[in-house]
Picture (tube, rainbow, N blue to C red):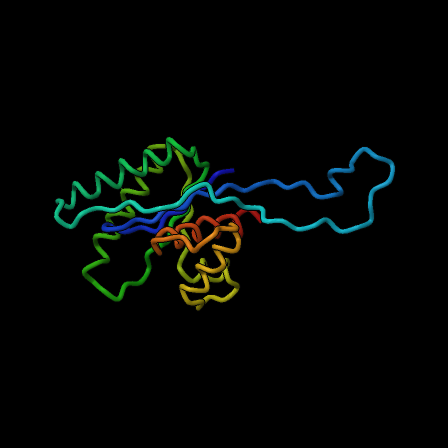
Length: 179
């Protein structure tokens, strides 16, 4: 199953595409034989990062053009990866009132793009994401980034930060909704 995680924004929208990999246990490998080994299976990561990055728009563009670009780029990603689910960070609190409206507009475009492509959407708060990924709801951004690097066996922490956040959103879907 492929999922796309989104960290919404007008200037920068992060995305991360993740696939859940079904890894057979030793028990499943030996089904059909008379005797099954009595050892515990080795645990491996169940998730693979297929891609990540960001969709950037210019402040020089009109707001409508920025939202159009977001829709077009997200549509391309959907066409390329064929996700079954879109997970997005839920906007629930903002310190800067100037950013809440543009980010809400971007989120609206994301929801509309998913609906046009008949992709179900799941929303998670920053607290839910931090708790799912690190086990601590007040985790710092650096810890989340390290966990993402570790979980997906990446050589380095994904850049920009919005991409790492989007991968955390996608991972949260798998950890919360499919377990």
